[in-house]
Length: 113
Length: 112
Image (cartoon, rainbow over all chains, first blue to last red; front, top):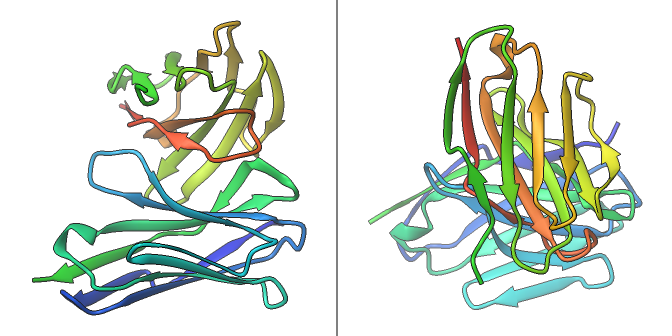
């Protein structure tokens, strides 16, 4: 069945360093890939997304890259800050229905001051 | 615009009972999706409603059901609660279901 693998499960970086989280998806028909940030006691917050017709997208300190051939996509956070500490989830649409998402298992990011 | 709201935020039930959770989407959004989040299984898709119709359903037993009203508000119901149903239930809304999904804060259900 459809699957999204996310690595690493935990990531600790020094403030100011970069953080990279990687995901692999199995459904070749997936065409929408959002990333969410979830803080304790809150629902997931959409931070960036990308569609399959785009290879890279950037929004200030956050960027996402997509390699459709390899079925890989990654989240890059530069100049990390303590407030970036949270759990990050990648997701992929199931087939071409972007309203149905399958999520990765999450990455707990800790930014050390 | 106000975000997605979910009520109640916390619920405690006992095995065998049933529960109804409510979700109000962002104004103008017509699609509502429901997800279950647990430490062991992560975020799992339950079902999605658009214009009062269920368009897709995840791999959950028939005890999990939902509906959507004409104002796009949605409810989900879980009957004959089991201990394993303890989870954070999240709803997400989007304009027409083919775009960005925005999550609410969730309802934390504890089954004793």
